[in-house]
Image (tube, rainbow, N blue to C red; front, side, top):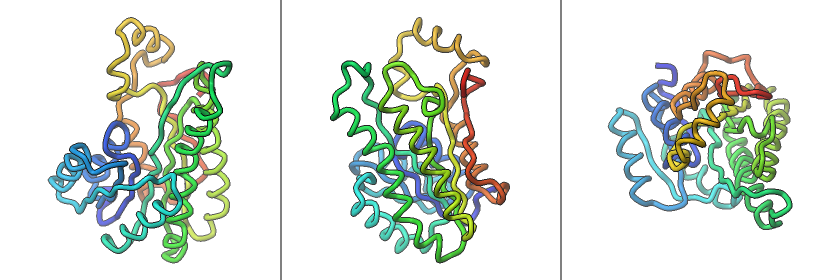
Length: 248
């Protein structure tokens, strides 16, 4: 198992890509601490699913875009698990609109959640990783942050900013063997895309050379690789998981 005896924090893991990452990590022997906005049925279900795989797992309630909550979350995880080897920053939102109709609040909210959570969690975990002399941070970006997209200027800006932030951190943290990389998913089938009309889904898939959407587990497998000891000399990389989408 590629992550045996390691401990990871995965933000936004109660559904979609985050949940898939947490499950794939657990299957690879990794203990998992994860968070969500509330301790509801989804968090409890993920917690039970992970522990059934034979690892230690615990869900926490935290708004990781808030610095105080992010720091308290990390502190609690370190007490409960003893160490953190891996951080996956997955928490994020969309609030789509054409720029001519986009409000300042829409822009601020998406930037605050998507970029702010990466900043807060990275800053919160950095001291412990620095002290132990190693760590892997995997930030979930998007091909939209590379190529842009209609009606997603705020989301694209936040994901592009994550790339710049990650590359800067990779340079700052490299001396302490802390690697920082970005996984950039393309069109991935999740609960949200299940609501897309069939004809629109077909149109989107025609833009993808592999002619299909990705799966959350395909994104998760890339995260396993970047988090594992298989790539100790890889840092500052942006890895598109997009089936060959144009401009990715």
